[in-house]
Image (tube, rainbow, N blue to C red; front, side):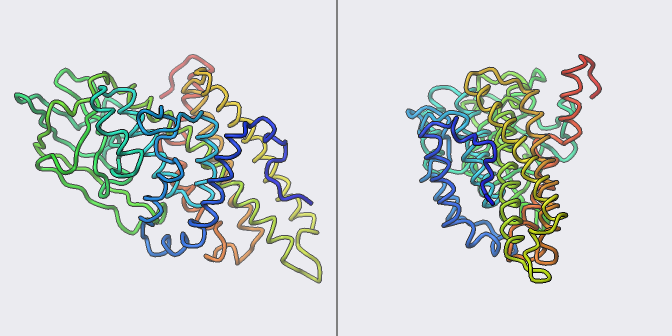
Amino acid sequence: MSGNTDYYNLQIHLSEEQKLIQMATRDWVNKFVKPIIEDHFQKEETPHNLIEELSNIGAFGMILPEEYGGIGADYISFGLMMQELERGDSSIRVVSSIQTSLVMYAIYKFGSEEQRKKYLPKLATGEILGAFGLSEPSFGSNPSGMHTYFKEQGDNLVINGSKMWIGNATAADISIVWAKGPTGEVQGLIIETENITNFTTTVIKEKWSFRASKTGELVFSDSVISKAQLLQKSTSIKDAYECLNIGRYAVAWGSLGIAMECYETALQYSMERLQFGKPIASKQLIQKKLTAMITEITKSQCLTHQLGILMNTGKASFQQISMAKRSNVKMAQDVAREARQVLGGMGITSDYPIMRHMINIETLITYQGTNEIHELITGRDITGIDAI
């Protein structure tokens, strides 16, 4: 019997640096996240001390160059870190991913050199925390439905509108907000919480999912910022989606981590739980469940690893990222459900992580693009016909 979730020995393709990042992250999660996360989840509290420590393991901006505070890591290393962080909890992985994929990447790709030097090193060390504002109360998958806009007023920009379902909304020191400019084109703005007028944030309370992270709303009412806060190189909604592609890549790896954690929990439990004097792992139906789990995990690992190779060579398309995000989240949802059944009644208790992961996966199904939208992205790609 082997509890190894790397059934096809993909480790042989990893570099020593990639292995080191994976194992160092796993050790950190085992030591600092797993012992306390259930309590924070139940109390709907964010483990702020862990957020601060994420910078110490390179979880903020690791794919960016060292001159901006990153470590210049490749995308497989980044993916492996996302996988291990989400084995702990989605809230931990999400903080890292928002900071790296959505905030720091946006500034690095679309910001000026002055903006890069001003913000990226502080974001990398965790001195400041970021948020990403794209979705709105009545706008999700339809870019033309965006209502948040800004206009020029001398040396300033005046913003009106709101952004909804924003991670870190109330805790962020800066937010990358996407809004329509005077010509109707969407551009990114760097919002400094301490340097904007008529700006408020709210937190969404009593969520059933992502309970250990804060989600909220950003509200602008004739809010004034300097023109210097505009991401000058951003010219359309496609730029926001480029950031989301990195975020979706992180979700693909993170959801794989959830599946691996649930499978390992179910396997271990099945070896220890006795029924009629024998471990339930000796029962055919339990072995059927475990076999299905490890098979689907292995297929997703192959898919995700190849996507990482494509990302490293600059050849990954957004359609390929979309497929991996949708497929891996659905796989993790199925694995978590089967794992919960293996544990029986114990599966719904906080003694085990499975129910918490199941609840978080419900958010990932619609997070950064719904399952249905990602299906239609693949459908359009293979048929050439837009059904959205």
